[in-house]
Length: 191
Ligand SMILES: [Zn+2]
Image (cartoon, rainbow, N blue to C red; front, side, top):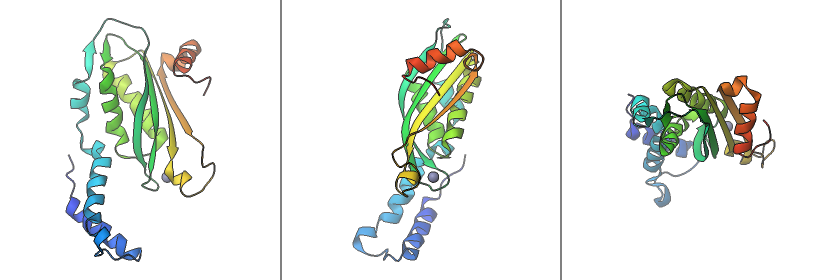
């Protein structure tokens, strides 16, 4: 697993401050490079997490095939185009086939992928795929609703809009009624 050289990152942040016309030696900025390096280390810790460990701690055997819905998982990520945050909520639905996820563990799983440089579309697909693969589910549906600071702060396009992405696999893809049930349970009419 890749180790982060936070000292080197701090040095590079210092250079950015200089190029921005700032004085990195003034009091308020003295510790900024170090803080930014630590912040990036945290915001990208998904790269350095072991996915198998997270998944293995999350699985339980349960003989059920009812739809499981986990709503409103908080998502904080960084857009890979601008290194600016996008944030919102993730809703997950799946139909198990003998194995289920611990509810709180799903949030950790989301974080493994969210704490990286991301595209919302890819994040949505990665989450649905890893759930599908790790419990061999009958189907998985994932929806993320998020706001992107790169759009909001730069004043482009619709500043107050929320971006909605979804990824459906298995029975959620094949069966309209199942998909509709998911959408109504997470409070969305249609996607
Ligand atoms: Zn962006």
